[in-house]
View 1 (cartoon, rainbow, N blue to C red):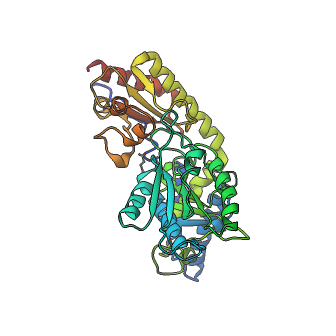
View 2 (view 1 turned 30 degrees about the horizontal axis):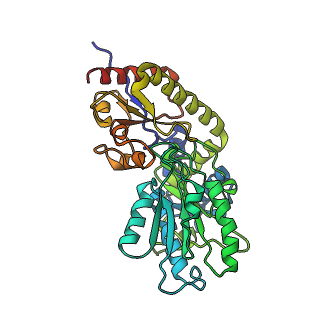
View 3 (view 1 turned 180 degrees about the horizontal axis):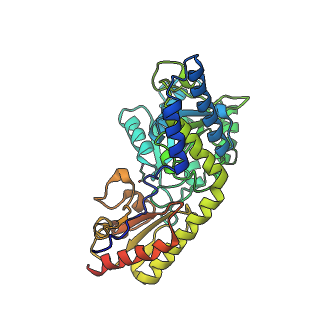
Length: 406
Ligand SMILES: O=C(O)CC[SeH]
């Protein structure tokens, strides 16, 4: 009987499994914390306490305060809430501060953001609700350049949103430097009666892989996505509390008073408890996770280069990248990345973002400086905390076999 070859999962940027400890947390809360956290009963209040403990754990992971964490359904909701807030902030007058009433809010972002930023902003443009500039990232590194952002800032700019790390290339963006520059400009703008520019980063791909410290980043908002760091499929939004000038946050829908009325709806206690557990694991083990993923990812890239030589390139490898992500393109093949993966039945990876599908060359890769031909044959390999170095040789052999039959 032929031994069933073990299938290897290398798509951790698409989603991660729940850590065993998180599964225990979720199942424990499903069993014991089913009460309505808004109930005054003992079991209601114990459910509420689990939520408060989870808030503290997520805050600790980010060097934030618990009161700066609002639980939401996931990264898409968190991102949309920030964009919704920026428009309302500008249009409520507090943003306009002497702007002509005819001016629309202006938002700056990059051209490689996740669809949960790109598509809402394109919608705002279509609906004439905002002017948006999608700043092209460097075609040599895949990173956005601060000067490219700065030169596009206008009097009616009310938000700069830049992802902390790209999901397809792993490129880490200079968010802390961008924040520093924006805060300098905000001091000048305040004297000129111009609106404060709010700063957001979508940290979905970064948390659990690199250090994410809201004080170091200097952002007003930060998106947290549980299912990228072995947590449940819910999220949270960090909103900076400042003594002198509170950061606005407007609810997108209305109902009960949960989450201080900012995100109403009876809380999903088990998932929130699980998110807190996942956050605690990151706080306790980030360096170990980071080192393990980098060791495995670097071994993978080295082994692929030894095997394929000039017939493989690692995309955006000159930039600072996440320790677990590798976007590689195969040359001297007529196959697309999707066709290559279809010939590797025991390798579960992707050609790019899961939400983009595998049909066409990734626009994100091409925007990051990868040629159309290389984007066409690209494969994204994203390792996890427990991807074993011993699996690397199997992965290389699977790809070698797939390319051999071209
Ligand atoms: O696969 C990705 O890169 C993101 C999926 Se939300």
